[in-house]
Length: 443
Image 1 (cartoon, rainbow, N blue to C red):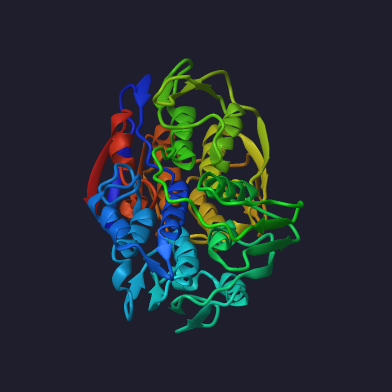
Image 2 (cartoon, rainbow, N blue to C red):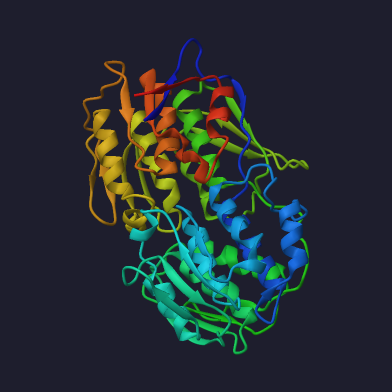
């Protein structure tokens, strides 16, 4: 097994560190889906558009700087969308790509199988499939009912009204919304019960509106998408990823000295990304955020003051930040009670259990149920006593959330470190440049 040994020696974190962020995979995959639909006619994608993707002539392409595995998974099949009949499309571990591709392929006049990694075959997709079937899609399970792989015979959807639980993955909801403008009857979507991850739904609506469609909330629970096709246009700016920024907030919180700064670029103060809230969270953990009004859209993080003694936060709209914040709080000695974590059990791994397991190795005993986690400050830290090896469970966010722990522990080992390619392929390179030593080795 490949491992990275991360060590903090000498002065540790540089006082004026910089890091380059990947593009937001949430935005990239929405842009790709919307562009594909805009260049679709009679159930076929425009071959000239597919060729432009292959040549890297669109905003998101195979040569684009800062794209991740989830985006490449969508690019891979979209670049050859003119010859999909009878093919098996393997989306790997890319959850966003699986959900968006399921809806998009249901619009194309093709017959293919959509599959993924072993973990992807364990992640339920039945609610999305049921909703698409209500709109006229022809989708069958080829193995286990309610889970990928899926056989999709596309091109028959007509639209109409669909009701969906509001606490399902926002990717299910976004997948439905984005095909709505292309349906003869449009889409009337009603969400029942608790609505989680609303910022991601709003992000989808914003991207759709920018592309010329009429899609909006009509009540607190209802979204109407009119049958007004997308405008064919080219996206010129894609924001960098706020979730990826969270690891640099953690790095500064754990390793920065008073007044130390860390600079990021490509982030908007008025971002549609829900994880923009990381700036608010880390304001309680000793990191101040300053937005610089320049063309590079620069954000300066500054280590200021001391963290709060306790942090209470609801992550229902920002679940991907939970791992970063949990690890940070433990290593800073900040007690916490975090709620809104119900989606963490069905991510790339059971993230609640994974956090408990790996933090226990560092001496922290975290309490949890299916919706919340809490820690009241009791610990027997293993810091500086031994080199702890952190398992990543094939989850990119486990690797990146625990890597900065070296700033407090002195050294730490990350098992299977290359899982970061799912969302942040250059993470380890960027971590080296902030002043940490990184050694590759095999166990």
